[in-house]
Length: 166
Image (cartoon, rainbow, N blue to C red):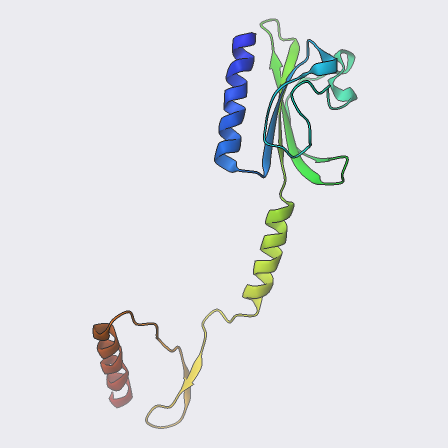
């Protein structure tokens, strides 16, 4: 089992290195409930190696009834942060749960950023229009700008003249 726990610890480190600071992966060895955390990557819950089981769900009597992994449920830290979590059970060759990999993800910063960006984008028209005086009445048209060199500026100017003259 020690080789399995060593591998799972490396996998946890890889997840956090890939995803970043919004994820925490905790590895539990349930042979010692008072110090079940044997590896932790990331830091959303403030735990460290040697921490006990997170809650009564991990007591052996409760684990006897567990059939499937628990994926995609909400949890809350003692400080009140809401996390999105999954528990993947580690079983021995007889099918007994002997450990767990717990993945915790915090989406609060992403939600805040999304809200901020959505508010900014909601105020911007999808196709900005600027009235351009053509030969004849003023009409609404999309203004093409932001040329990067003189050739583009000349080509854009010629295109505008061609549109005006027909």
